Image (cartoon, rainbow, N blue to C red; front, side, top):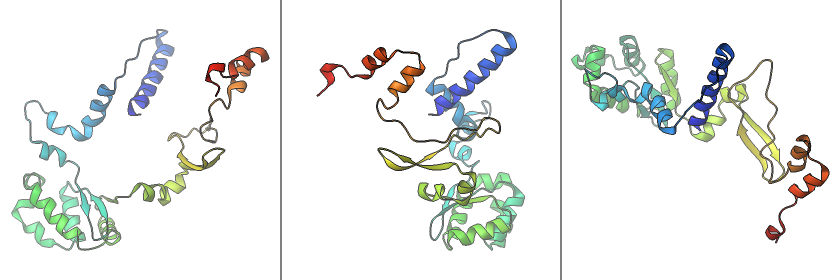
Length: 227
């Protein structure tokens, strides 16, 4: 799926290059190349600095962990001094500001296990909604961790109208996501679900210019496959 999206972007870029230069070209995309390029920015920090490698644990800590609360999970990302100070206010732990292990971003990175464990211990003491309200009030980067069912029912998802519901003649009422991009001048047609096997055979063949005799021959399954 990801490789297909990269291929579509690459084809679009090649078409633009052809428009500008008048020359076509071959475009090669592999699943291996795609996934390595996709992961590099967020998950391959330990492999980036050739002359100054650092442990994978430190590399992973560029994005803070998902934390358990009293009734679920939330994500909290704290890196800068301002964010750290805001977190201590949100969880009512001003003593963390005096802890020598957490005085600077470098020290908080060096003592990452203690920092994350202390944060986790505090966040387990109250439900997600309470923590999110307190964290947002202090401008701490945070977000709820939603299940798939919760995600598609989120108010922002509804406002974006990205999840569509349609009636399918075989499957009944179905739900699917529209393409993410929206075009002001060429809006997408409304989805109706996937067709049944052979449902549009005659229509497509007629559009292709086939005669009625040819359509009948092609639309009819071979006798040896009729049971």
